[in-house]
Amino acid sequence: MMKHSANIIMNTEVAGSDDVELVYTLDEAITVVGFGKFQALVLAYAGLGAMAEAMEVMILSFIGPSVKSEWGLSSGQESLLTTIVFAGMLVGAYSWGLLADNYGRRMGLLSVAVVTSLFALLSAFSPNYISLVLFRMVGGIGLGGGPVYSSWFLEFVPIRNRGFWMVIFSTFWTIGTILEASLAWIIIPTLGWRWLLALSSIPCFAALIFYFLTLESPRYLYLNGRISDTHNVLKKMAAINGTELPPGTLVSDRTNEEYTPSENTHLLSTRKHETEITKSPFSSIFTLLSSSLLKTTLLSWAVYFGNSFSYYGIVLMTSELSSGQSKCWPHANEATDDSSLYRNVFITSIAELPGLVLSAVLVDKVGRRISMVIMYSLGFVFLLPLIFHQHELITTSLLFGSRMFIIGTYTVAGIYCPELYPTSVRTTGVGVASAVGRIAGMICPLVAVGLVSGCHQMAAVSLFEVVIIMSGISVLFFPVETKGRKLSDIVDVNN
Image (cartoon, rainbow, N blue to C red; front, side, top):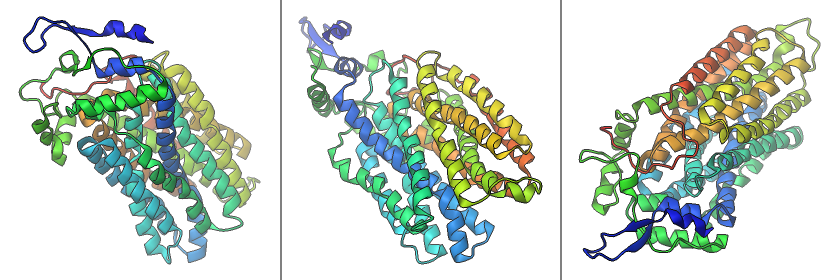
């Protein structure tokens, strides 16, 4: 393991003397420490947060019909239960990103866990429709903190095989979707939707309980000039992994950054008094829209919008095609009972597992951009036949294939976007992109539920196909491939 110390810098300008001193940077330290037991524990906690988010989002596919039947709701009121959660996630994705970038990843993790767990449980005790909408909306704000978990985990992972480990992290989302589909299949027919909401909140409370075992991201500490705190975290990482830090002193590698700051650069600085620059909510947005990041930001928004629109559309369309085909196609003889709905949703949820395997194989071999283009193309092919009515078995098979490839693009984008942004605005950048994706989630029910239930399946699927094409084209215009590259800490807005 110490062979990596060959990369250590020899600094001959120490306190005005000619003595040679061994020094090392954060990236070199993380590389030497390697991926071990410590990172596995970080992965477990971040994955728990991702699983909790997935369960709370997937629950929207199941409670709507039950609540509609119990309280006599209209179709519009049923759709609002989904839309309001995504509206909350839209607010949360931006807010938690700002909080984590300005006050630390742990502050973001705690805030997300508190809000999500509390309001997820309160939803189960909603006395009426209005209270349920309000509780789900605030819970949605908490769910918007997903980018905090992914950014926090990313900043502990060495460059080598980083894409692979981020795919493993994404696996927890899929576990959450499968677990939620299984719970709904078992709980709703016997105990009802309130018990499903209550049991689904358990992972949220687990994230809150285990929060107190987490450590602050060394990259966040390093960026803010807290070198001693960074060194302490690195020592704990090395001790748990059974390795050692490189010999010498931890120093800033700011002179080696790919983005070299100028006197007018707006960013977090290693000098303590300069960290106040990004405390304004608007300064991070200005940085994202600066000349050096504008193209990346706009393309990220396009990809996140397309991924969310396609993914949640396929999820919701699975429910609609399972429950409403006989009404639109009088000669169809498919079963339309609740058992069929739960079975089809469960089967298509399983599709995410091979999608993640494919992502893991491609992401570090052919790169992030080519991986997404390949999977967008295959997702398009599988979805295309659904422009026309198909037999239930064929419909489920096609939805299985399209979901498999769309979760692949979703996963790779979740790796690529955090790698594109520097540490100073990473969670804000990913958070705002996620917020744009939540807008897509708000529109989805109008297409997947509204058009399909209104017997306009061809129009709905055609719109999904157009969005997939536009997302694939957007990927081709990203300015850089991040496979095997160091994470950047700072950005020059004049570059």
